[in-house]
Length: 172
Ligand SMILES: O=C(O)CCC(=O)C(=O)O
Ligand SMILES: [Fe+2]
Image (cartoon, rainbow, N blue to C red; front, side, top):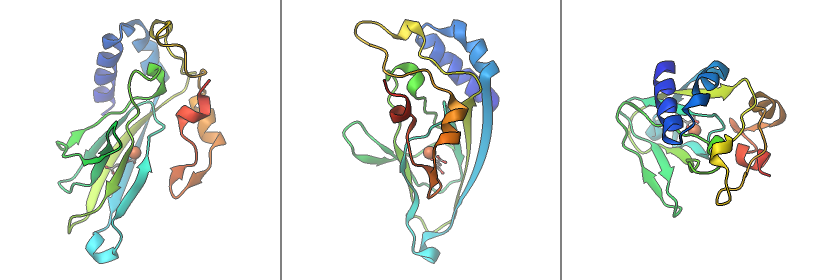
């Protein structure tokens, strides 16, 4: 999964013409795995698996079993069920100076089965700054440099999720 993250992230860096920063980015990356188990909603009466949120990682990759549940919020605010192949999804955040839209998502439980997922989330050991190449007159710098690990020390976790999103934390 680390390799998958590096390959996809390199493609993103190349797409924006900033591949020269990719090696340093990989050196700075710390990888974290989380296992999620969602009980059968027919047994618990609970159909909310995870409330709407945006990940605070630099990138996230999810693998899930055959039970659907991941939903993604579109630009127009509609929730759509995401029918993923077994391994998929990656969200990137503030580094792109908002060229990549953060992906708001949630987990709804509708099937008569347990759902399992594994997420790999990346965090940066070095300061994350928007590359100068992604800042110009049409795209003014929107975020201050981010101390990613400091951010996690400063926030509170409520219902398993941080009380602040990273975009608000470092917006200029
Ligand atoms: O279980 C899932 O499919 C989503 C998990 C998720 O969004 C998260 O852990 O942040
Ligand atoms: Fe998430």
